Image (cartoon, rainbow, N blue to C red; front, side, top):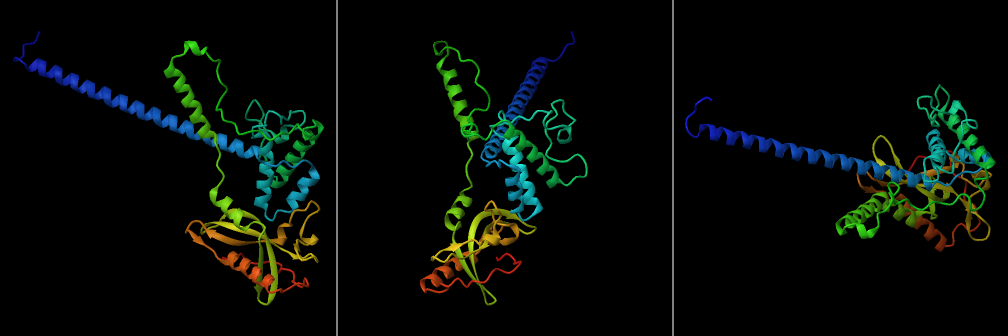
Length: 327
C-alpha cells in the first residue's frame, strides 16, 4: 500500500464521497424534473384530446345529402365549407359516440382510407389532386348514406353523450377493507384531477357577445341607402393584422305586421342564409384590445327610428351587392 501523510487519504475519501453525493443529488433532481415535465405534457395532451372529443360530440349532425348540399350552399367561402365538412366528419368518428359511427371498408372503400396503417383509417384529405371540399363532401355523403342504412338517426339512437370524466377505464377495485386510507385518498384525488382536466369551458367572451348582440336589429344609412340588419351569429376570425370578434348580419325587411323578417331570396330551402347575402361588422380587435362601436351605434339608431315611428311602410331598400366590413 502506498504511504501517504497522515490525514491526506481520509480527506481525499471524504471529498470523493462529497462529490458522489452531489452527483447523486443532481441526478435525482434532474430525474424528478424530467418526470414532472413528462407528466405535465401527458396531462396537457390528455386535456387537449378530451376537449377536442367533447367539442366533436357537440356537433349537430347533418342527416341527409340534401341537407348537406343546402348547408354548403349557405356558406360563403371555401375555407368555411371545408370547416363545415370537417366538423361533420369529426362529429362522427372523432367524438365520444365514435363507437356508434363505424364504417366498414366494404361500405367506404380504400379511396377514402389511408394505406399507411393496418387499420386503414378514414382520411380527411384526398390522396391526389382532387379538390378538398369535393373530396370531403363525397366522403361525408357516403357516411350519411351508411348511417341511414343502419337507422342511426332514429329517435333514441343518437343521444347526446354526457361529458366524459374518466381518462381511462377503471381497473378492478380491491375491497375497501384491504386498502389503506392513504391509497384511497390518492385515488380520490386522481379522479378529481381527471375530472378537472376533462372539463370543457365555453369561451366567456363569446357567451357575453352572443347574449348582448345575437338577434339584435341594426339600422344603417349607407350613402343615403337605408338598410336594416339582424345579427345571426358571433364568429371569431383572424386576418393578417389582428384577431377579432365579428357580428355576422343579414339584411331584413318589414313583415307587414310590425316586425322584421329575412327575405326568402336570402335563404336556402332549408332556411339557412345564403353566404353571399351575409355580411359582417367588427365587434372587437382582440389583438390590440380595441372595442368597435359601430354595431352599438346602429342598434341605438334602430331603437331611435322605431321610437320615432319611422319606416313603418317597409320601404327599406335591399343591401348593396358587396360591402366592406365596418371597423
